[in-house]
Amino acid sequence: MPYWEVFLILSLPYLSRVVGGFIYTHVKSFSIPFIILGILTILQDEINLLFIVRFLIGIIFGLTITYALDKASKSNLMTGITTAGRSIGWLLSYISYSLIHNWNEINILSGIIILSLIHI
Image 1 (cartoon, rainbow, N blue to C red):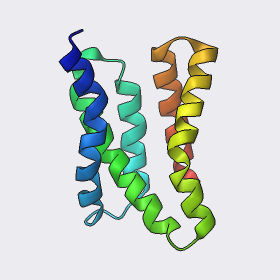
Image 2: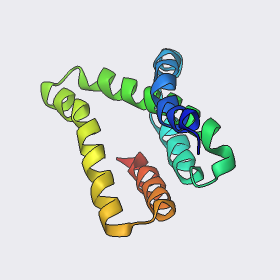
Image 3: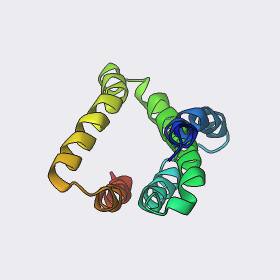
């Protein structure tokens, strides 16, 4: 895979988070973006859809982060937990890859976990 494709795949979610933050001002829902995020996480296995899926994941992730920070701004503890989510995510991805060694299974498992967290 050429370097520009790798760069694009890695950077698309970060670039599109800004779009998600802007969309949050109109859609103040938590469950709908979470459902879409879970489905898109599972769809990352399809290489033909990878660019668009990564872009959409960034938008949805931007929505959920903005929602979480909006709700957490009323509590210092929740603000700390929300901002620590990035490092917790990197740690969980390392642990999951160390245990499973298969990105397809990790994507499916992650999508299922995200979908199960909607009711919390």
